[in-house]
Length: 282
Image 1: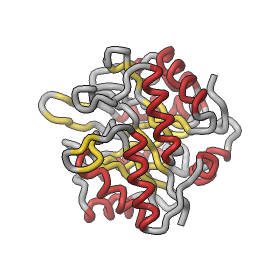
Image 2: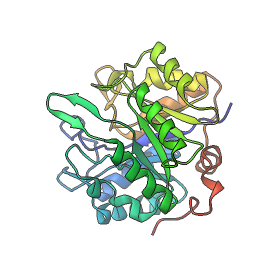
Image 3: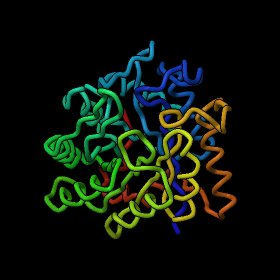
């Protein structure tokens, strides 16, 4: 069984300081939270960026500033910008961080009804456009799937040449409009990905650590962080992203699973298979 790769989704686009005062907005705060997660054991920082007032941002310049700060503090960490942005952003807006040629970036493989009138739109042409651009720039996609049908879409588009194999999936489970965060559905998702693929499990809200435990036991990888959940336990706000990562490390220890360093994560994910993937930012 591979060592465990922990991804920290440190701020997201929607969660605010009203939910948890430790949610980072500024470049300095984002660097602080990335460092806390890295020191606790995270190999990957999943990165959204915000304006200083917390407004979701997606411009290349803001990503460049945040990436530079994270790399100053954690030189070897893997940074994975989000191309999801925030609901309502255009494809051109969402793709801006790809121009920085990160090692990885997210590739959402379907549309999700997030509740009310909030729809996160990813048409087939959007997925093809993003996938093609990632191949052109040498960026490895993390294939974001909110339901089993999105896995099928990714497999079909990989066969058509829009996504490179082997694929790395992120199962986002327990979000409104997506697949439930249950043992049955977790097993279903794991059994649905192609041989040779890797995966990370993301549980939303109260499901965060249940999904983490399942992934640890099953040989997958784990994502935690303020984007997905701001609580360390029921009613107890986490003081930092580092606290959430530390809890995963403790769980992994209970099940005898070692934690991957960034260098080991690069090998597991195949980021060293292409010299363009093993790069420094800026």
